[in-house]
Length: 115
Ligand code: 5GP
Ligand code: ZN
Image (cartoon, rainbow, N blue to C red; front, side, top):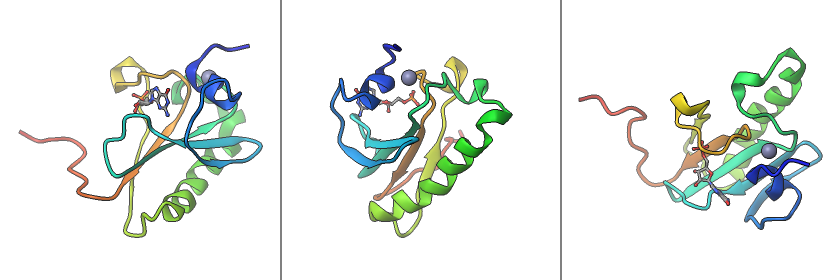
């Protein structure tokens, strides 16, 4: 059994503020939000990151992308939202269980600051 943080949240061993759950997916609010709405959508299946996803995960990844706008709207983000997938150390990933950040509300700054 994986002791990955998000796997433990999936198993209910660590509490979360749940946004959505079905057989394959879980969405929950980020513990340290960067905007008024900030939640994560994760597959229940443990994948370290997008880097290890293969063609066998195409349906799962498609389901995640199609679910994101539905959940964003349910959370009141009627005017749009940002999706972020950090991949690997070079992408700033801290929790190595694939997740999509869904962020919105308030002022969303440019994604990358240009000097
Ligand atoms: P990453 O940097 O890997 O893309 O994002 C990891 C995210 O997980 C961070 O935004 C962080 O705030 C969030 N996080 C870390 N630990 C927990 C936790 O125990 N519960 C919840 N809900 N979010 C967490
Ligand atoms: Zn995991």
